[in-house]
Image (cartoon, rainbow, N blue to C red; front, top):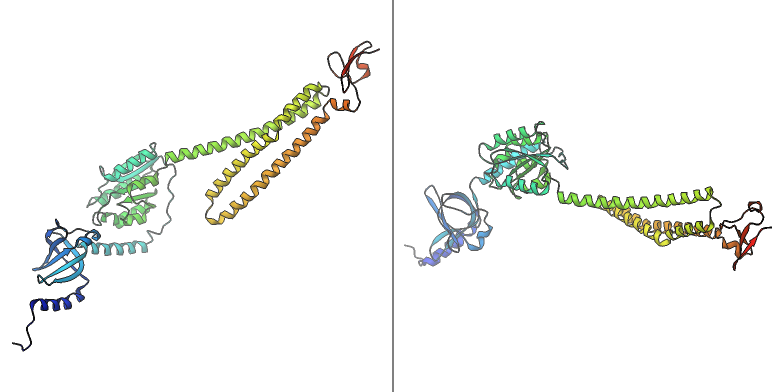
Amino acid sequence: MSDSAPLSVKRLLEQVKTKLEPPFAAVCVVGEVSNFRGSGKHWYFTLKEEGAALSCAVWAGQQRFLQHRPADGQRVVLKGSLNLYVAGGTITLAVTHCEPAGVGDLQARLRALEADLRAQGLFDRPKRPLPRFPKKLGIVAAIGGAALRDVLEVTARRAPGIDLLIAPAAAQGERCVPETLLAIQELQDPYWGCEALLLVRGGGSLEDLWAFNDPELVRAVVDCRIPVITGVGHEIDTTLVDLAADRRAATPSQAAELATPDRAALGAELRRRVEALTAKTAWRLRGLETTLNLLTDHGLQRADPLAVVETRLAALGQRLALAHPSRGLDAAGGRLALLRQRLGQAAGRAAGDLDLPRVHAAQRALAPAVLRGLQQRGQRLAVLGERLRGLDPTGPLQRGFVLALDAEGHPVTAAQAQPAGAALRLRWRDGERKARLE
C-alpha cells in the first residue's frame, strides 16, 4: 500500500473529469440507438455496438438544432462531447448532432458523381428557353402524389386552357429510374405535341431522392428534345437532374408556375395596351380631322368666291372657337400623357442603370417639345385670326366705304349686274338706307 494519503471518491472522479473531458470535447461515434426516452424535458438513450454501450443525452436547449431525432433500432452517427457526472460516476455523451448512418457516405458519393458528370459537360450546356404560351405540357409524376395534385391545381388556376399529358412513374425505389426514363422518352415524341416537360416529386430524405441522381436519368434530361423543368423535393433539396434541367423549381407548384402564363397578368397587360392604342388612335383622328377641315375651308374659298359673307363669317367663327387654345392644350395634354406612358414603358424595359441617363434626357427634352408645339399652334391661331378679320365685311365700312346689296342680300360687285330701277340696300358704318338705280 502506498504511503500517500488515499483520495476520496469525489476527488478521484474530479481528477478523472479534468483529464477526460478536454480531449473528448468534440467526438464522433456511430452505433445503434436503444432504450430511447424522450417523454421528459431531455432525451436519454443508449448507443450500443459490439458488446459496448454508451449513455447519451440530448439536452432540451439542443433538441431544436438536431436535423434527425434518434429512435430505437436506428443506426446513427452522433457528434458531441463526453461528460463525467461526478455525483453518479457515469460518463455521458452530450449530443449536438445526429444523422442516420450512411448519409455521409451518400453525400460523398453524390459529390463525386456530380464532379464526374460536370467534367463531362452535362451541366454546362446552354439552357433552352421555355415556351411563353404553350398549348400542351407533359408531366412525369407519381399518380396520386401531392406533387401531381399541386401541379394540376396551379395549372387550372393560372392557365385552364392548356392541355396536360401525364406519364406516371414511381417516385422512388427500383422502379423509379426505368419508369421515369420511359416517361421522358414517350412525352418528347413529336406525335404528342408537348412543348415542355415537367419532372416533379414531393420532398423526402436523401435516400428517397437518390434515384434522381442516376447518371442515365441526368443524360435523358440533357438529351430531351423539349425543355425540361424539374421540381424535385422541397427548396432545400437539390438533385443532379435539377442541375441538368433547363429550369429548376424549388417545389412542384413553382414548376407549374414557370411553365404556364398567368391569365390575370395577361389580362391586365392586354387592357393596358388597348387603352394606350385607343388614346393614340383618338389623337391621330383629331389630327386628321383638323387637316380635313383646313383643306375643306380652302376648297370652299376657291370654289365660291361670291358666297354670302355672313355665312362664311359664321363658319369661320365656329372654326375659330374650335381652334381655341384650350382645345390645343387638351390635345397637347393627351399627347404629353401618352409620351409619358411610353417613356415609363421604355424605362421599365431598360436593362440596368446604363439606360437611366437616356430616360432622364428624354424626360428633360419632353417639356420643351410640348412648349414648341403650343407655340406653333398659337402662331397658327394668330394667322387664322388675321385672315378672319380680313374677311369681315364691316372692316371697309369703318374706312368710309359703302356696301351695296341687292334685293336678296347679295353684294353687288359689278355696275352691269343690276338693271335700271333695281332696288338696292346701301349699308354704311352707322346704318342702312334703301335706293333705286336710274
